[in-house]
Image 1 (cartoon, helix red, strand yellow):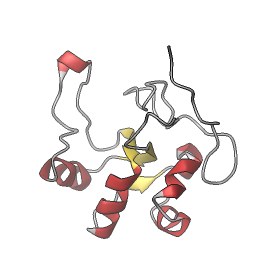
Image 2 (tube, helix red, strand yellow):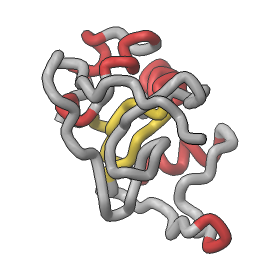
Image 3 (cartoon, one colour):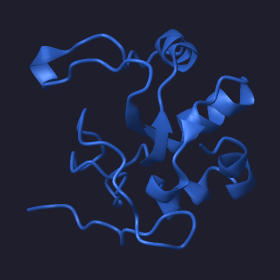
Length: 124
């Protein structure tokens, strides 16, 4: 019994591009920031990790940089692309530590939480 994926459309109204296959990312672990009703975190923002953002994320309770082999997770490093939760991205933006965003790989559902102007201001 699988989840029903929302249509793969980016914030620009085009076909959603891949975010990262190395490391593999996304709610569905398919390399894309696809989403569905069960994706409560809305892992929809394709962001490029920075040391500053990774430190911030760890500080607010989501350690993305420490390897977790039990989850086949090598840990992220600066330069890695990752599907972030839209609310965490918005929080980082409000704190002045938002990472850069790949708009073509950011799912349109991110717009439920993050205004397009904010995404564009942080675009690659």
